[in-house]
Image (cartoon, rainbow, N blue to C red):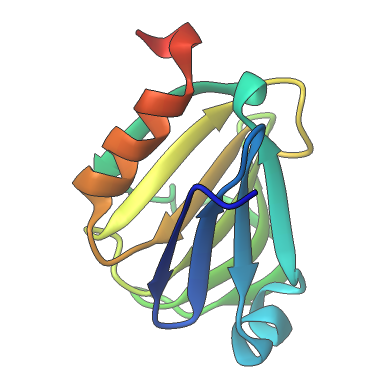
Length: 127
């Protein structure tokens, strides 16, 4: 059962009953080497909207990284695993996760503050 679906350029976010589903367009899938992410609400331990800065020494494990531009795919930094999909780091939602494949998921969306609020409404552990 879909609760709400938000589409932004090459990404769509669907709020299902128990999880967030982030799907990527075919071109974004090629760049990030991932078609979709299914993130249980129970795995979300924090959410932020707005700016994100990947440390310059982060290691790209698989995906695409253009200096000062597009980032997509898997990265590692300071013992943490990241999944990134953005061009503009000031229009992202950052999910801090536990007991999931990644420690942080960062995706660009059209309205980061509204997406953050939608996630907070579905994650009672964050209130």
